[in-house]
Image 1 (cartoon, rainbow, N blue to C red):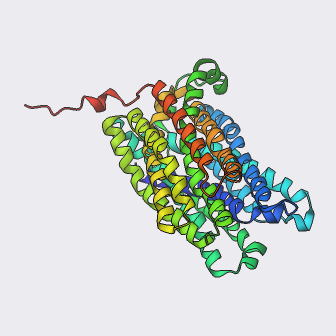
Image 2 (cartoon, one colour):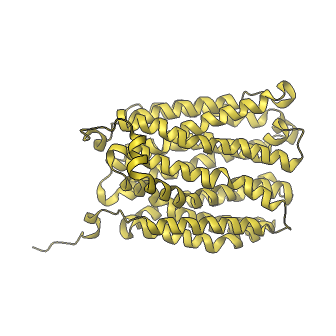
Image 3 (cartoon, one colour):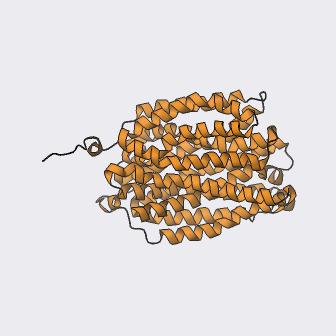
Amino acid sequence: MLRLAAASLAGTAIEFYDFFVYGTAAALVLGPLFFPAFSPVAGTLAAFVTFGVGFVARPLGSVLFGHLGDRRGRRPVLVGSLLLTGAATVAVGCVPTYESIGAAAPALLLLLRFLQGLGLGGEWGGAVLLTAEHAPVERRALWSSFPQVGPALGFLLANGVVLALSATLSDAQFAQWGWRVPFWAAGVLAAVGLWLRSSLAESPSFLEIDDHARVPLAEVVRDHWRLVLLTAGALSAGYAIFYAVTTWSLAYATERLGVSRVVMLTCIMAAVVVQGALTPLAALLGDRYGRRPMCLVGCTAAAAWMFPTVHLLATGEPLLMFAGILGALLAFVTMLGVIAAYLPELYEPRVRCTGAAVGYNLGGVLGGALTPIVATTLAGHGGRVPWGVGAYLTGIALLSLGCFALLPETRPAAVVVAEPVMD
């Protein structure tokens, strides 16, 4: 289990590195480089639109790789998704800017971002299912939380590279070629991930299936459509919170408040370190008290903290901004720690790879794709404190709370009734 969990963690870290490095670049430099005719705010919005395309592609990737995972096994999904995402990310670093090739530049950027999202749409289902289906029932949430730490590590790695480049290069050097380096590094990371995953065993739950679904998506739509919609709505808050405080806040603080890029990246990264460290703890609590209660607590905390978050961000003071971001991510991690066990348990094994991945990635469209765009628009029409952003995030948290309330608990009964036996 430790070797399997480590390989899943490393793989998701690498794939999310690819995905996050684009978000950081979109917030910092892609607007003026690929949309130079736009105003600064409009250019950032245009860059966030290309960022959102990756989320739109993720459900399609979950259908494509989910079909492969339910028909051929979870293991092939891990290899195919990693290859596709890694290749697309390296290619982003090679795209000429608008100054060189005109309108073809943003078009290529859009295509490669779509391919990134397609690959990542398959990654989560393969990595999480392979871990969850190998894990002992009484510690399924804990072992399944290892791939969930991967996004935090990927974020830290992506932003750490950008932070190092920002600290050592001038703004002109960073805009000219420095922003490309993190994308090129994805090729090396993808090779490492493929090596780590080359010896993983297939999921026992998949091997026990006698009658594989011929068209998994058709069964999911026919028999589990309500469950898919509920899981998508439930997960939208987690996506919205994470990308609001890691992507939108970076653009808001540097462009609107004049906060140093290095300072803001440091605040965000410090909060994500705490988030990653607490993910297994949240999973342990999920094994002890249940998946659904943890998610309900997380959504309630998120709804209560969104207005304080935007108020603290608007101060422009590093410690206060860090406090706002950290509070939001603590609410987020309460849900994140158990989701990798919760979603697979909601679906039967024959369509689990498709169902869980589609629900998970549709939540990304609702929460992750729209949030930077909506938040940037709302922040541009208010005063110094973007209260509209707080209202938007609070509304999404309440939507997710309602969806989680309608979902069943899935913690296995064996965990609940574990009592000592006296001779």
